[in-house]
Image 1 (tube, rainbow, N blue to C red):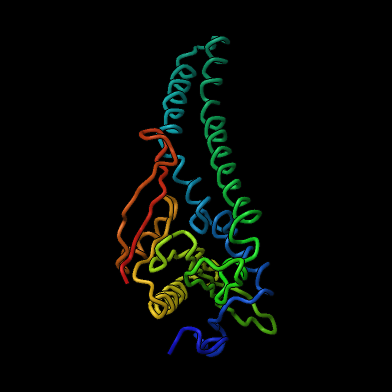
Image 2 (cartoon, helix red, strand yellow):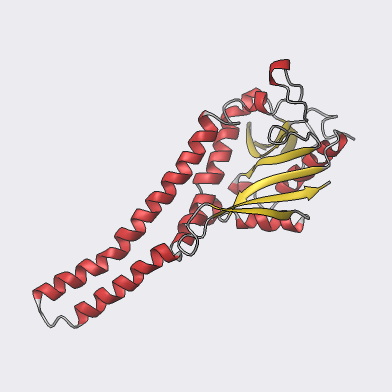
Length: 258
């Protein structure tokens, strides 16, 4: 059965979760879900920015401030009530929080710029048009696209808790497609939703002649990279977003033969 044979898809768990194609009314929830996966989470591990903030504490560009702080502590302990040495020691110790705050600000700024770009100018402006199954002539690049969501029923409310997109725009060879915007609400992770979305995309892509998929991810999405590699994806390219030996931040391109 095609992944699109049923518009609203099969229930995943006792009718509480349902896989279906994206509808225009989903736009606000989908945008919020994708933004949350990038910027927000109740713990640092639940967003890529949160993971980045935690990892940044051990990057060489930040760790150097710890050395300066240790020097400051040494100066303080050996000051012997010398006001000048005490002030010098305190100033050196203050380098740690100030330096960490500076580089966290740089990281947050970079992530916010990325998010604003896809919200204001990229695929999240009009998800229905960008990932249209049936594309209008002025928007038809010749390749298959689609966008799926998983909808949860919570009492009388329905909430989008997962999404994924297949994009054909990034490849001139239309037998190649790109997996994009896989995002799962932190309340619904580790329930097999990501795997279901990925396999739905695989089925749809194969049925439409796609023989290879690509995706991009970053250093701060380690759990996602590990999942993809378990599913047979292979890293084919790595691009430095940070400075080698100073800030270990990379953009990875993975590939899968269908």
